[in-house]
Image 1 (cartoon, rainbow, N blue to C red):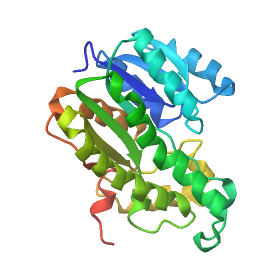
Image 2 (image 1 turned 90 degrees about the horizontal axis):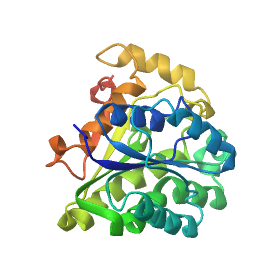
Image 3 (image 1 turned 180 degrees about the horizontal axis):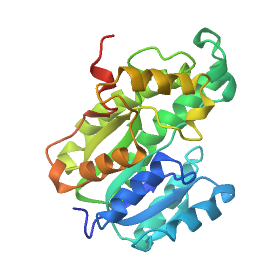
Image 4 (image 1 turned 30 degrees about the vertical axis):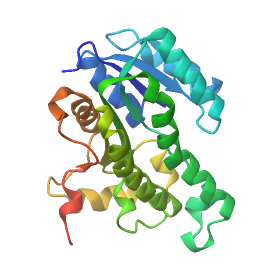
Length: 255
């Protein structure tokens, strides 16, 4: 499904991350990957994980989206190692711990700006920065969550950031459509990742999700990975500007 397609994934944090599940699914479908990591602390982990892939990554490169110069360096690295890419997967989100612990009413200005910069603007920055290395019929996929639409206690400023991210998907789809680049988001159900456990009461969210979702279970990271692989493939050539729910049906329920 993805044979001969070159896809960049930013960033992989650890083996439990959704980004890694996406990398595994895309690798299984024949993609050649460019893997991103944030800093030297995570570099070794990503290098070790890459050894589990069937296809050796084209490159493993640093990308801290808080620094514009690193995004520019990513473009140069992709030109050097791959020439062009057919896809970009954006798996970047962050909010200061205090902003997730305190009520949204008490979100500090600096924490709000940080959350929106890393979780939302980074998609815009990467899309613009990598436009010169996109091939025709490219695909951009990002990750969101239902807390963008409905209040999830303790998700707070991250819910606002995800709402802005979903709006960005639609506007980027419009801007990049003439170039043949599709932009979509996957709204994944709660998955027990290191990042998710930073949200207070996360285990309670998992329990409620399992009880209320039509499939009576939580989603697996593999299922999110497989959906990302589909969106990056030619099978999804007519899909853009959409939020695709991979949450075992939880979002359709009213009670």
